[in-house]
Image (cartoon, rainbow, N blue to C red; front, side, top):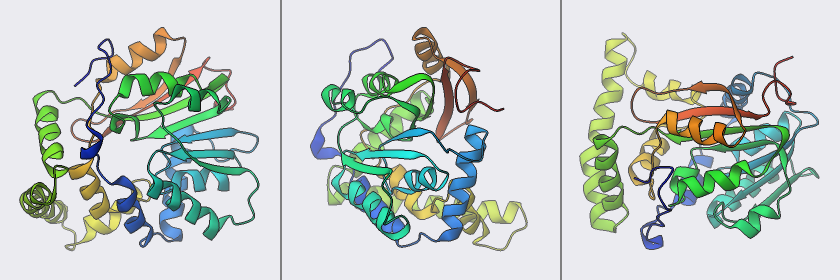
Length: 285
């Protein structure tokens, strides 16, 4: 894994996971309940319940769900993704829920393209949840993302937690998954039963009816348990970051940490930075 002081390492593009195909499948499960949960989690993260007057950039829009709820909260939204299927998913959500929107722009582009990123202007809110660690050059992608934050703006990042040897093992597993059909079958055959047993154990230990853990997973930003399993197993390129490295890197570049939500194991750490803090449009009143 790259440290913030090491040069970028671009992964083999032929091994890239088909993120957009997974999001297309996810959209078949999308309903108002998932949208409501995603909106509630975003409001909780930002500490406010509307985004009127806010210019928001969604870097790596994926399914388009985060862009949709930002739009519903009143923001002027620009969404982009490198994956053509993800762009199509975002456009589909705009068609379903905001077909007359004039303040939601969707594009295809790369978070690693300096020319593309420079052409996006600057935003009051730059949002990238679980994306930049999949670019193959995470730290340069973070630099380009932070360059799009306007003065008094907010940067919300979620990045995979660095677990040392465990993260290195997962890097190898994900690479195997993306190596072709045999690797995908082998990884799936090994881990889907383990994940299912873990979900069942969560129900039993909490005295819940089997299947409760899966049904309640929607509370995590409106997500789907199975689609997140598939994204986790196949999510390659794959990089991780220690929280202290993220904070050190951003604070060195004049950002101030407002809030962080850290995981103890697998998954993402969420960071909210302000430029500068306590004067941004997204601060609590």
